[in-house]
Length: 167
Image (cartoon, one colour):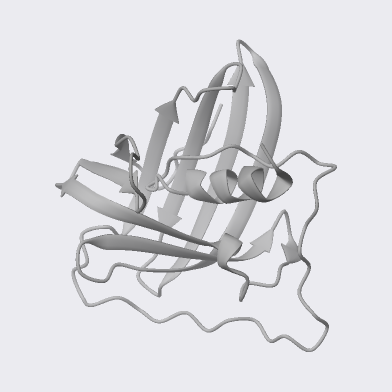
């Protein structure tokens, strides 16, 4: 899988979104850093009462990944998102990625736009930093998402407390 594909997956992992789907980028992979004059993006608050606001946890197995992919996705009422993605094999954490940016939920979809990856501002205008998921089902405790592409398998995110931490 190319570095571009790995980054996209990890961002996706964001997914979880809802937290959930992704493969963290290896530390030696290419990161498209933002040009010096690119401003931080401004996030837009979703409509009041948006059901996706909260913290979502996803654990999944993924082909070609040894261990499980864990994603903790936080969607806030001001339109900002945070995601932590890690690959865990037994007690060992193989890799971890922390991303921040903005989110929106237009017409049955969840869109994550990553602007920082492990603290570094990225060129968020590049399509690889935008992850789009179809919301297949959701309620106050669970959300079922799939990537917005043919053949994508659904994954489930579980709502957790704000204080939840990946262990």
